[in-house]
Image 1 (tube, rainbow, N blue to C red):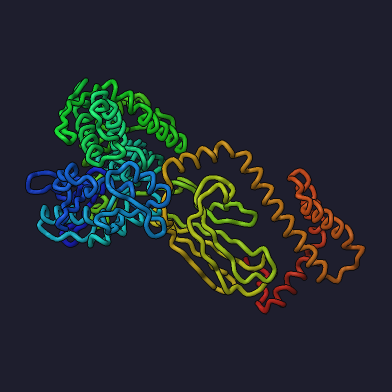
Image 2 (image 1 turned 90 degrees about the vertical axis):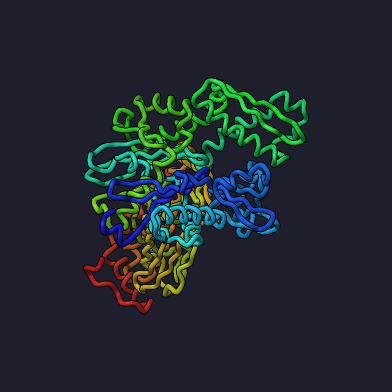
Length: 619
């Protein structure tokens, strides 16, 4: 271990849906941190015993059949979730889940509510303890990985879980990026890599370009509601439909937590067996002395999961399209996540990418190993390495007419900061509402609102004169902060965007599909809104300027007439074909007297506002 690491110890943690683990950098490179029996993986499971004690990891997983409604697994699927997403997940889980404050997910045990962050913190404390024991010194700082498609709420909730566990999360790193590092893709040679990450509960695909030691994510896609758990669920449902079970009157899987847990465990075990065999069998006891031997074939299992595997391939195609790359331009294809051991998955990825995917690193360990490499960078180790991730969906604010003005575009490299200047639409306006949206459509109704705040105290001025600079800052963890500043006065307001619930991947896919399907309609609608905004501003500004001008009527007659015509069209909700020429005509006429009329009006308006007029060469 290098001197810098001796001074400061930062570990990498893969907080997984199914299993969690930690890794750290040594002189020989990154290594996973194992317990005394040599086991690296800690099942992401927490069991609450009737006597009030708590079990974590393998000990908790062993209690799943005896305590199906008190053994909490797959908590990663609930973190940062709220609303309908909670209800959808609750139907799939044997333990009780309900909506809590702000519609956020809550787990119920013995009448007490636990947040997903609290459950995750229990798991993280177990990971922390195992790491500290393996290293022989306390661990307090970590890099934690998340799926690339985790939104702001899920990322922030993960950081909150770390804080509850007594860990300082120095950086949130996308899992595919960490995995690429683990495969020895360390920036020593340039290239383009597709990382296919199929874990227990989430799927991600990222395309990275490495140039001069800099890792840049060109595109990312995925589904936080797709993983090996879904493979298990399909196989469990198939097992439940076994005629012998039906005749024996086994309780429906949706009603009996014991049956659900038993069949889920059986399906998981059969899935592993089918990775190496064409058929498999397993004997299970389903209560009341009912014992059954369940059988499955690889052919039937692959037929069941084929639609899910195809969904992952669709994400791969979308990522390649977003990165503007052909399959032939890929230099490496990397498989990550335990579910990539399924033979159908490996065949499908090989067929799509036209190359044999790399599997030389244990897919269960790759993410943690990569996180350890990034942790070493933050601890002062390898300073030559730089990771640059991307924003998964565009971010912007609402402007007049209900359209979204995008400041940060989808797949923009993070960290990033973008500032644009806006103004008021009404005379004497002393406050503005800043509504923050996420999505690819042009209108706010078709995007998702993330946050809202108000900038108050603007001195009353004519519309268009205040200079409101809106800054979007997306930090290295992918968390968004928005600030609005009125530049003439220095007044400022800001918000950190931590939405109360996250997007489902179905919603993300729908948003992307809608943005393509409705692109023409959206642009037409946006053009009309912008034309109307421009027309209204021109009519209002022209009339004010003419009222303040001392020019004779014969010099302004044509301008007044053109303004009246445009005003009439606006009142009649005219379309772009009529508005465009009317705006162009008024613009041409006002340009002829702009120096005398508009210029003097602006100076007078500024004087009336009590603010100093700008210098002649001021921006």
